[in-house]
Length: 69
Image (cartoon, rainbow, N blue to C red; front, side, top):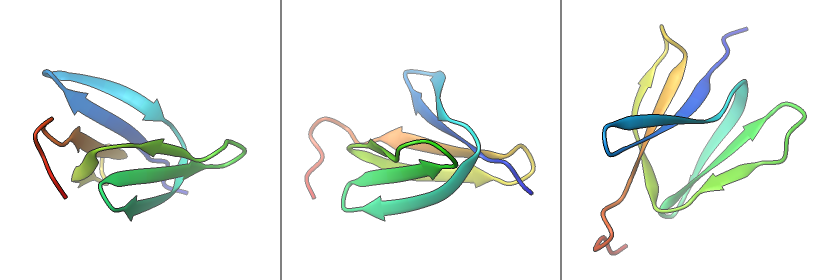
């Protein structure tokens, strides 16, 4: 099984939010992330920047503070 991690990138740094991701869902301006045996987490005001299947990472970026839907 391919194991993915979700990383939020901001200010040149990467913060791993969750490992062993089983589900991603974009809901409006947020991304909901699910993993086995863990409660779903929501990253508000974020978008999927890239998915690197080889390294097993989903990179999220935050919308700018002045972003409107």
